[in-house]
Structure formats: C-alpha cells, structure tokens
Image 1 (cartoon, rainbow, N blue to C red):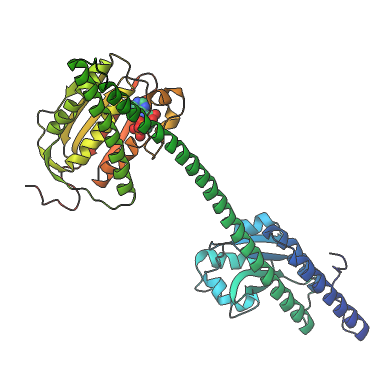
Image 2: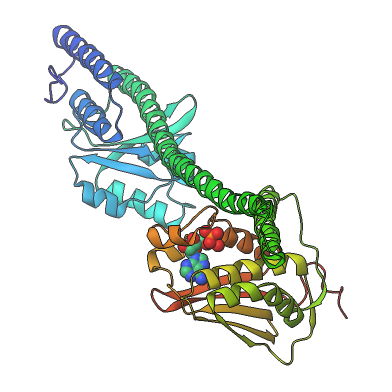
Length: 438
Ligand code: ADP
C-alpha cells in the first residue's frame, strides 16, 4: 500500500486540503486495485483497516466480517489486541445491534437499553475502548460486515470529505467482502463436489467389483448346469448318475434363480417400490422350514446345526416370506464361513420388544474395520478368504433393508478367527398395524 500517510489529518487550508484530497483519492484508487484481487477473508483486514486508519487518522479499528452461511462475525482488529476483541465481543448479524445499526451511525446513537445481555456488554466494551463509530457494510442491500472506528488521533470530528472517503471505502469493502463470501461459497461447493466425486469413484469401483462378482456368481452355476446337462447325454450313464446329474442341474438352477430374485428384491427395496406384507406367523415354524431346505448344505460341509428355539414362541405379525429370505442369507453365510465340521446355532426368543432370532457360527469372523461396512450393498470383505467363498455382496444389504422395512433391527458381533453372531429383532406387531393382531 504505497502512498498511505498515517499522520493525523492536516488542517484546512487550500494547499494542504488539496494535498489531502489527492492523497485520499490516490489511496482509494490503490485500495480498489488491491481489493479486486482479494479472494481470502483474512487478507481483507489488512487492506480495509489500514486504509481507513491511515486516511482518517484513527488509532484503532475493528472489522466484523459476516461468516459465510452462519450467523456470526469474524473479528479483525488493529490498534487493539484481536484476542481482547474476540473475547469481549459477541454480536450477530441478525442481532438487535446489527438491526439498530442500520438506522444509525456512531456508537452513541445506539441505545444500550433493550439489547440482549451479550450485545449490551459488547457495546460497553467498545465504549470503554473509546470506539466512536459503528457503520454497517452492505452489498446488494445485505449486511456483510460492520466497521467500528476508535477516536481520531487528532481528536477532531470527521469533516464532509472524511465522511465521503469513509462512505467510498465502505462501498468498496462491501463489494469485496461480498466477493470473498461468494468465493468462499464457491470453495465450499467445490469441496462438496470433490467429496461427491470421491464417493462417485468409490461407487464406480464398487459397481465394477459387483459386476465382476455377479458375473462369476452367475457363471459358476451356469457352467455346472451346462456341464451336467451334457453329461446326461452320454450313452453309458447309469440311472443313479442320471438322477444325480438332474439333481445338480435343479440345484444350480435354483441358485441362479435365487441370486436373480435377490437382485430384483434389492432393486425394489432400493427404489422403495415395495412394502412389507405382515401376516400372522410363528418364527419357530419359519426356522424349521428354512433349515429343512439347507439340509444338503449342512451335510456336505458336515456342519452341525444346533437349534435353540424358545418354547414360548407365539404367532406374531411379520412378513414371513421376506423374513425367510433374511434367515436364508444369514444361514448361507454362516455355513459358507464355517470350517468343515463346524457348528451353527440358531436361537429364538420372544419378549416385550418383539421376536428375536440369531444365527451364530464359529467360522472365520469379521475384522473390526469391516464390520461397519458389511451391510452396504455390494460390499465384501477384501482378501483371498472372501474370494474363496464367493458371493455377490448383496445378501446382508438385502437382509438389513428387509428388517428395517418392518421397523426391526439387525446387528452383528464378531471376532476374527472365532466366529460371528447376527441378531435380528422384529416388533411383535409392525408399526401402523397395532390392532391387526388380537
Ligand atoms: P456375500 O453374498 O458376498 O456373502 P453378504 O452381503 O452376504 O455378501 O456379505 C457381505 C460380506 O460380509 C461377505 O462377503 C463376508 O466378507 C462378510 N460376512 C458375512 N457374513 C459373514 C460370516 N458369518 N462370517 C464371516 N464373514 C461374513
């Protein structure tokens, strides 16, 4: 800021008055040139405060700049410790002080009475510090800041020229502060955009991973179906073999159809295009029904099923077909992640909170860092273990959505190497249909 004279204002007299005017205008010009390039709020204080103090021979000044998107001011001070100002000042752009300021210049014009406690003590602090002027800074009619000025070094009142200079500086400052706010808005929007971008990239790579997994999940049973169908055509196939091949074909086709059903279900739930259909059912019966369908899986992996079902279980209201899907997914994982000859326990309880079932295995378990993510769609724990076990990464996400659509909860506790337990609780009567069951 070349050319700023910090000496007290000169007395009137044609030559000095003219010199002062030229100096003032030069400074204003200089200020306007410098301000145009300011994009950061913290650079404003130096420019505005020092210019005002230099031009008007003021010993101390405070600039309150409105925070972007918040009802607060950032405080900049010169000639008084910024720390003190921050400690003692508590003004808000929407506060009574700011509103009264619009109708008045000069702190003396602002009555302290009726101001909220924190605002009147702020005014008292300013008066103690010999601040005499408080002027709003506006841009496009909006309050963007407040300039507070202390007493002049020469103790003289401002003359018309001083007032004019001050008004010009405030106009300019308003414009620049508004620009800085816009710039800040833009920067924040950019940051949000960058965050969304990162999230989009994550989603994109999850989508690719999902497609690769699904491709694999579809291809494996399909290859079996084709392979066994071809085997059926061999002339020397015995009746037993034929039966076995046909069984395999049916089983693998069912797997395919199950995966496709799950994908369609998940899409429906994601689009919120379907709702729960609660019906009277007994959770224990459902468990018997589902585990019956898994007999072959238990047998093949020699996993022992331990059923611990509550003898006091009664009929409650829940979406049985969908809850069956949840149980099947949990059971499928429990067997998949168990060691050969492992043990899987299914237990049920009934209480005031609702009906609960849990599926416990003693398999590989889940790392702490992964637990929060396993319910996300298409999410699989990284590493060779998971790849060995396959899966499309939609089972748990679908289970969670089904449980939550019935106002229930699903949770997991797990320890790597020791196993996992998934627990589902459903209300006895779904929300909104409390009278549906007697
Ligand atoms: P997937 O079809 O791949 O099994 P899920 O949504 O059912 O998808 O499970 C997501 C991931 O959570 C699995 O890939 C696995 O890493 C982990 N997981 C789920 N259940 C268990 C379990 N019982 N034991 C260990 N890991 C599990």
